Image 1 (tube, rainbow, N blue to C red):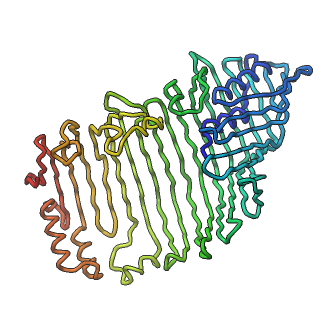
Image 2: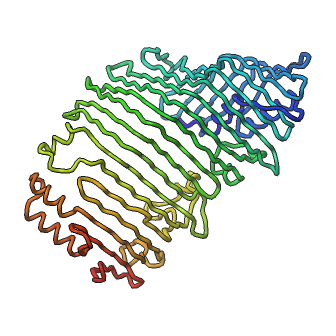
Length: 507
C-alpha cells in the first residue's frame, strides 16, 4: 500500500492551517483557495455549502483520493466546517474536534484492508488574513492526535487487543503563508508540535507473535518552503517535479526516547533507545534530491535470545547525507554521500567477550566517509517506467568524477585518514574490466597500525605468520611517516590506466 506523502501533507497543511491580518479576505475566497489547493493534489472535493449571515458553512465535506493502480482509496470526512467573516478583513475557521480518515485498500493479489483513523484537535483556533492571492494562516491547538479506531482485514474485524496505534502531539503553534504568482502556489510554513508521542502494538490473532513500540520526541519543530504548479492535478512526484514543484524543509527535535519489544516463536527481543536531539532535512526539485538525517547523543540497549549478552552502545553523532540527481541530464551534475558514526562506545561487558584482559584501547571509535562527485543520469529515478526499462547490465547513469573529501577510521588505537580526487573516462571500459577508467590520486595516512597488529597477536586473534603477511602488504603500498608507527601512501592512476603506489607501478 502506498499513500502519497504529498497528498497527506496537503490535507494536513490545508485543514490545519491559518494566519495574521492586514488586507481583506473573505470566507468564499478562503474556501475557493482551499478547494483548488486540495484538487491540485488529485483529491475529489465535495461539500454542501450554505450561508447564514457572515458564516459560510460546509457540511459533509469529503476528500476522496484513489490509490495507485485502482487498489482502493483514501477518504477524509469533515462533518461540518465553518468559515466566519470577522468584519475586520479576516476569516476564522471552525472545525469539529474529531474527523474520521478512512483508508480502503483492495489489492488484486493480497488481502483487503479497511481502516478508520480518528483525527482529533483540541482547542483549535485558526485565523486567515491577507488577500486572495496571498493568504496567511495562523493556528494553534492544545493537542492533536491520530488514533486507529477500526481495522478490518479481508472482511474480518481486528480487535484493539490485536492491533492498536496512536500518534499525538502538542501544544501546536504555526503559521503558513500561501501565495499565488506566475502559475505557482508558494507555501511557507513554520510549525511547532511540542512533544510528539507514539504508541503502536500488534499481534497475530492466530498465534503468539506480537510487537510494540512506544516513545516520544520532544521540542519538535519544522519549517518548509514548497512551490507547486497551480494547473497540474496529480500526486505523481515525477510529473509534479517536471511541472516545477520544489520542496525545501527540515524537522528538528531536542530529545527522543523509545521502547520496543518483538516476540516471535516464544522468544522476545526488547530494547530502549534515546538521543539528545536530531534533525531530518530534505530538498527536492526537478534537478536533485537531497536528504540529511542526523541524531546526537544516541544510546541503544537491546536484549535478545539470539545474543549471549545484552547489547549496549552509545554514539556522539550519527549522520547520513546524500545528494542525488532526479531527472535525466546530458551534462554532469552534483552527487554526494556522507556517513558519520562519531564517538562510538560500547559496554565493558561486550568488550570482555573478545578482550577480557583489556589489551585494546577502548577509546571512542569514529568512522567518517565524505564523498562528492559528478554524474550524468540517463533516467528519471522517480519515474517507474524509466527505471523498469533498464536491464541488469545498463547503469542508470555515468560516473564522471569522484572526490574523497574525508576518510577517517579511528578505532582500537589505530587511525586511517584519506583524501582523493578522480575523474572517469566512460569511453574506456576495458582498462578496468567494465568500469570507467579512473585518473587521479588517493592519499592515505595511517598511524598505530603496527601497534594494533602486535596487540592482536597478544590476544591470539592473529598469528605471527599472518601478521608478517599483513606487514609485507603494508610495505608494498605505504612508506614510513615522520612519526613512529605511521605510514603514508599515495595511490595514483594515470591517463594510460597504470596504477602506482608511491611512484612504483603495480598495474
